[in-house]
Image (cartoon, rainbow, N blue to C red; front, side, top):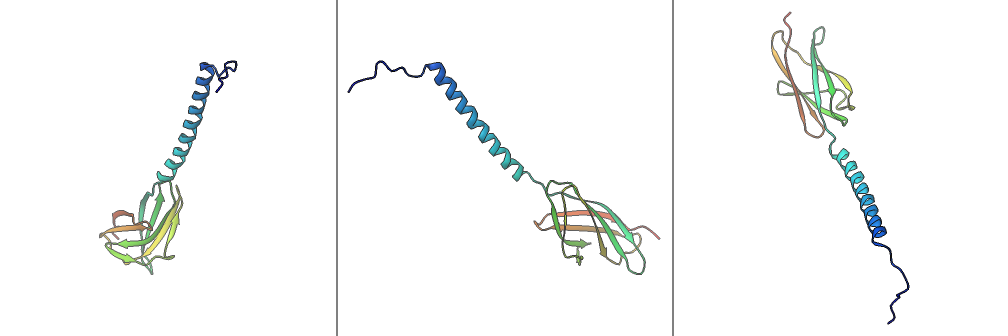
Length: 136
């Protein structure tokens, strides 16, 4: 077997530069992929009930102001007042990220009593607020 003595191989400097360039390219690709995964997994579901307004009249309501402070839209499909599930219309609603939604829960409340409102999302997370109804 004859060796190619006249053929020159890559110099060590050029080989090192190629290896470094390949390493940098692969690390950039991995970093971009991991960044996309992080944004997918880091989405949060966070609802704040910012206000309960007790409305009286021919029908009594508790108006609930709901703000989504998370990064994902949140679908609310249950509302509870003092541990009793309430009927909401529509049966579920979605609050977009950084959005606000107003919900009227028909409920016969009494002046001066304390009421706890709980909203449950489609993923099972519960969000609470407790307030005392105003005295007449």
